[in-house]
Amino acid sequence: MKVSIIIPVYNAERTLERCIGSVLRQTYPDVEAVLVDDASTDRSRDILHLYRKDNPRIRIVEHERNQGCMLARRNGCMAATGEYLLFLDADDELTCDAVQRLVEARGDADIVCGSILKIYADGRTEMIANEPLDTASHSDIYHSLLTEQLKHSLCGKLFKTTLFRAPELKFYEGVTISEDGCLIYQLVQQAHRLRTITATVYRYIENKQSSTHATYTLKEAESIIIANKIMTDCCMPYEELQEQALHRCTFKMMCLYAERVPHAEITRLLKKHGMQRYIASWSNFRLLDRGQQWFLLKRYVYVRLPQQCR
Image (cartoon, rainbow, N blue to C red; front, top):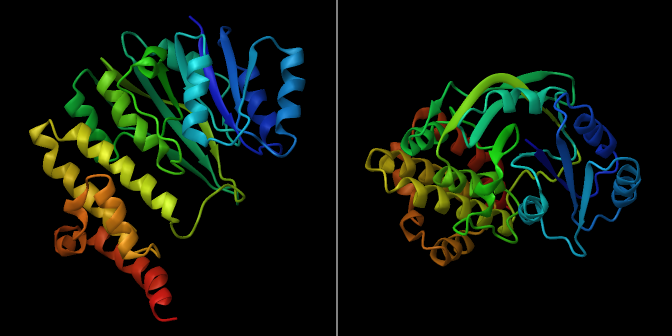
């Protein structure tokens, strides 16, 4: 059984060789790497072609214009020839037995989830593991996602390739963050069984130069709104999940209001995506637990308030 490893690449010349090396060292023999160059402006494309020249397991998809990680992943999936696939970011790496561990645990599951080791820039490490889960119940899987017992990241997970060929699956151009959240709930809809394992299969290496921001841009705010709309749309058919999904979405919308995104723009975006019920999210502040309340207060004091006091 062939496994395709999808790697979106954008200006990753510093980390690309390490990333590709982790694919070529896999103990599982039937692996291909599908690298999607998203119109890089550094030496990334040259590095890709050097590797392809020496290794037939490497395939390259080239974008003439930058389309973002979500569409890069989509186009990588369309080019994949494996029955199952994995996602790998260009500044991270797989453990050498990652594919082997996931395939051996597959059984009849369409999605198999492993653990992620996060490596901070200062050398600290943190294990990001999922709670034990082996179920065909979409309600149980969504509950695990809503409670963070199952991580939203697409990385560290083995997916049946046909899940990404389903006509119902929606990819959004211009989504800059929350890409994984946009897809994972939709993929669960198509899956017949999901299973987690304890093995560490992915090494997430903190990159200080990656595109992270202290506050949200307007495009990022819209990406978060889209991801949460998908989450609620997927969960609402299950009566036992409705309150939990609405509570999570309310908290996420409150986080937008605590940032420097203008209130009028947030309101416009919520209306645009049919999320009007969250325009008055602040009225539900008392319904949040103390940890969520404290988080929002800190964001407001350190982010929104200084902007208003200028």
